[in-house]
Length: 356
Image 1 (cartoon, one colour):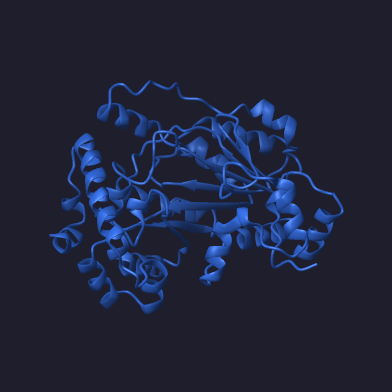
Image 2 (cartoon, one colour):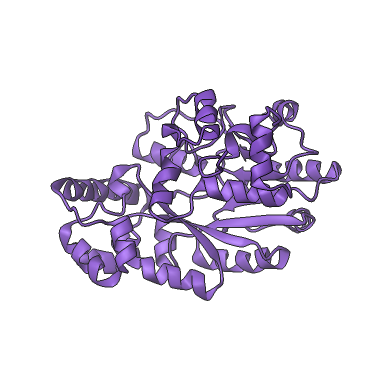
């Protein structure tokens, strides 16, 4: 058997959200046949449902499949070839758990929505008062405990919402400590803006393997626009604490047509601060895709981005649809800006100048 098409998630992974929806991987389509996916992988075939990873790998980029395989190999201390043999023999259980525990969040990121952020729900109601109020919900941890053995868990990923803003996440972390499982690899995808209490800092400091993956799409005003109303200085301060707790601090870099002009500047900041980062180009909504730009801005980018970056994120086949999507982008962010009481041109003046 080859591991070139194998992914640990169909056998050893589970993702559960606050509304009790479950999947083996967030990149899979809404409707998928897990048994077909497993059969294809063990047979050396690429499952069509896993297209998101194949697309990245074909571009020479690291996919989530490759990251998760390497991670379980490391934290289980078991070679991926043997893990695949376990899967083929039917010996599997949930060892990698991703919990979207709540949609409570303090940000209204441009690319987010009211399902993933309580603050976005409030913003949507400013834009349309007919949108119903939704009570904040938290995942049914007791139900999750019946499905997953937390004492044997190797990897736990907490996402949101904003996991550091949701206080009950710390109750869950204390439960792991009570079980004596402080060696579990804990990953928190955070916007990095939350002021932590001494108790919360103490809980986080007790885990031997912890990763803070900070969502950073730009620096300074670029960050503050894309993740309004967060402040860049708060992120800088929290990064100092994160690095006191662990040397495993990384960044999730979401790339869109609004920040690709600042791509070199952002990458330089990551490299200067020795922060590993993963590219996350937006494909949906289409009006935020990196290539959804007028030709004049693309021509500027062709002179400033590397050939590889330009080909990967922009491409040479400009068409009228790109221009229409850019107009849709301007319309959508204008709506957001009115509700937020801001103007994108003040945060992204370089882009505004080229867009005139």
